Structures are given as C-alpha cells and as structure tokens.
Image (cartoon, rainbow, N blue to C red; front, top):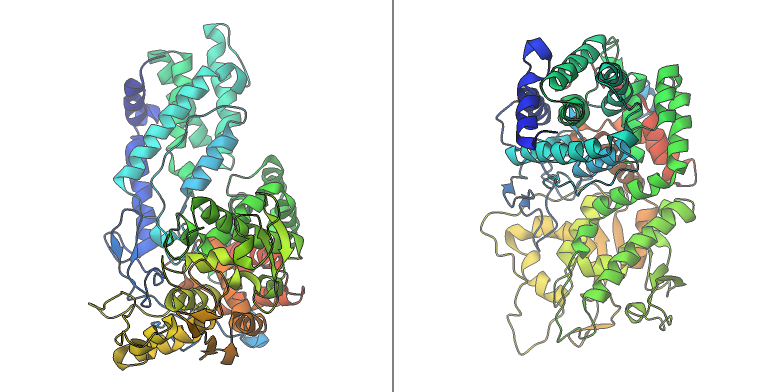
Length: 608
C-alpha cells in the first residue's frame, strides 16, 4: 500500500473516473451549502444565539469554542419578535385546536453530523475494528445545543480534520480488510468482483440509503482506476477515504417526495436517519433501514412504533443524557473551584461527585420514575456518597459510590435544588442569584433576558457600607433595582433570590454573612406569576405551569430537529405538550409525539 500523501492526492483528483471529480471541491460546496442553509446567505456573519448565563448580568456575550464572541442582540422569541421584554412569556401559547388543523413542516436546513455523531457513526460502520482517536473541532453551541444548524458553518480546521480522520480510518480498514470485507480475493482476476461486492454492501451503510446507479458506477470506476494505478488494498483505502469525506456521509441530506400544500413527506431512509440520530446519536441499524425499505416508516404509526423500539434500546440512555447535559447546562459543573478558605473540604473529588449526582438524578427521574416532569421539579431524592452527603445534610453512606437517599423535603425539590447544579451556577466564594435566575428563565420558561448594556461592570456589587454586613441578596439589590438595571433584573432576581438558602457549593444555610436568609421571590409575566418563598415553592409553581411544560417540549423539539427557537411552530409544540400531559407528564412521550408529528416527518417545500 502506498503512503497516505499519495492516497489523499489520488482521492482528490480521481474520484469520478473520467469526469475528474474533485472530492475536496464536493466537500467545500457541501459546507458552503450548509452555511447558506444556516445563515440565510453565504457570507452572513450573524449567528443568533440565546444569551449566556455565564455572568452576573443578563444575556452576556456568548462565545463559540474558539473564543470569538457571538452577538446575541438579535435573539428572537419563538413567534419571531425580538426578545426585548424579560417579563413577557416567549413560549408558544396553546392555540385553539381549530387553528391547529394543519401543522406546518419544521424547517429542514442541511444538517451536518455533530462531532459526537460522526465518531459514533464511524465506530458503527466498522464494528470490532479498533480505531485511533478521531479528533474534530468542538461544535458551536447555539441556543443551548451543539446540533443547532445555525452554528454548523464549517471551518478550514474542520475540513482538514475530516481528511485526517478519513486517512487513519482507511489505514485501519486496509490493515484489517480480511475481517471487514465480504470477500478475500486470492488472485488479481477476483479483485474487480470483490471490489464491486464490497462497494455494494458497504457504501449504502455509509450513505444511509441505497446507492443510485450513477453513484455506484462512479465509485466502482474510481476503485478500478485506483487498483490499476496502485493495488487492491490501496484502492480499498481510497474508497474509504472518499466516502467518509462525501457530503452524503457528513450531512443528512433530506429531499423528500413531491411537495404538496407547501411541504414534502420525507422518505423512509431520511426518516430512519432522523430517528436514529435523535434517539441514538448514530446511524440507523439494519432493522430501521429494513423498515425504510419496506415502507413501514411512511406512516405515522410506523414511525411511532420504531421510535419506541429505539427508545427502549440502551443506546437511547446515552443519547438522552447528552440532551440533558446540554439543556440543563451541566457544563457549568466542569472543573468547579471554590474558595479553600470558605469551603476547605471542597476539592476536585467533591466536584466530580456533585456533577455525577446531578446527572444520575435526572437519569433516574427520566428512566426509573416514569419520566415525570413533576418528579424532575419536585422530587426530594438525591444521589450521595461520603464526599457530598454533608452538603445535603445527610450522614455519610460509608462508600464512595453514589446511593439514592431521601433528603429534607422542605429544603430540596427536584433538579433546581440539586447541589451540583447550584454549585455550578455560583462563584468561588458566593452564590449567584443572577446565574441561577437566568438559568431558570432560559431553560424552563424559554424566556432568556436580553444582553446587558455595553460597558457594564459584571463584578459582584461591593458592600458600600463596610460597617454594616450585607447578604449576597442585599448587595445585588443595591444596584439591580435602580436605573437601567431594574427592568431586566426585576424578572431575573425574582427567580434568583429564591435560591438564597443555598451557598456556593449548594449547601443549605439559614444565615448569609451572619444575617438571616430572605429567600422570597416572585415570578412575573408567565402563567406561574406570583410570589413564592424558597426554591421548593418555586419548583411547585413550575410543576403547575403550562408554559414550563411547553418550554420543556420546545427544548426537546429544537434538539430533535437542530433548529432555533424562532423556527418553532406553536401548534406542533402545543400538541406534543398535550401528549405529555395526557401521559401523566411523562417526558418520554415528548420524544414519541415529536417524531410522530407532521413537522418531524415533513420538510417545507422551501426552507428559508
């Protein structure tokens, strides 16, 4: 087999046989198309994102993985209007059933595989093959999710990484070809037939659909030309490189059938990919592809049936955890550091246990407690071990393994009071009403506040009277209820002050800086409007809120389709929410109702 430099050159200049198709050009064109689908036009630098929750002022600048700021000033609510009033609900109101007789297809921009989906898919294409680590640049996070098509504009680094990964995978395949290929030619006369047989079986799995006659012809021609110039193993490697860099692999291209009444039904194979990447973060399995071929996915009932099969598979647990990690901002618990003076027992081991505890709580609610939204918001259980039992006011368990325990129901209520999450949305020395308040508004009410004015000091307000101790709440109230800050912060602090009983590591406290804690708060502009005292009461109010139910539905729906909040169809969200409420609030029904909806199973005739 020849060196990888020669192989790469050959792929770029010879795929397509006599046509001289340049693979690099194909990929670049596909990436440009993706950019156009995401931004509206090629060259438009604006990427709309929801405000960050990483500062003590609302909606501070969000950043892409390379550190570049991304303007969030034009973030819009689901109805398309600028999100300038933080006290106004932005989740879709439930429309009258008569107004929802015809559901709109959701936008279907050209979706690129995320880095996670890419790695999972490559691993599934070559089961049993030990592959080197595949490295891709981190995906942009837009409006909370890394699969949002608005952030999928490709970079030169990404294209280079695709090429590098394709080469190392090809080398591994060639080295193990006798185990991976359906045939093993022992004479030159057998190689052409073997190559044809392998391409016919392998490439449809890569493209996640049958090959067209033209595609098959071009690949076979390319294989034969490579075999003639080099040898059989090299030709195999070149084909692997080619298809792993093809837009048919890197993107989920959705053409659908003949448009009717403004939308087109997706094909069975297109739906198979939508389903598998939603439920499993990887390619369809053989059963799903067989269902596509037989027409089982052409009906709503068929889609729902296979969705339940996918949801019951262990791979769904991993994919659901990926969604929860992004929706609930578990990244805020990465590498937490706290003041060793104020919290001497806090260390990296405690931080890891806090994060794992929060993750296990959500997983337990979703899979073992009926998927109840009420339980997510109100259950007082927690996973604890010797490292973190004290933070929950519980005795040590005698083990480093996390174990389920009931906590004081007057102090803990669901995900909002999980110590790890509270510690993540806090600073090294103090709690943060703003971080916690914005998190609730953004993630559970789908109502992120607008970004702060320019040149605003983001530091925690100082105590202007050193002779008089102040609580964290009082320090924020000095500035937040005055001047230009008041409008936004009245809504944010109404939520955030309700968490005042929890310190920077998520532990319960009755006093703050020697003063009694005041944890009264308020909710404005939503169907949960009113006063409350502490996070436990807040969780109860949220569990009764239709807007919260609709927001949770919207988060899942946006993630399932990789679209932004402005792409939400209120009728679809309302009907999916209704399916959840009709199932005793089982959040798993959100997934089934989402994929069964017309919006998931169709694309618009024209995607903006």
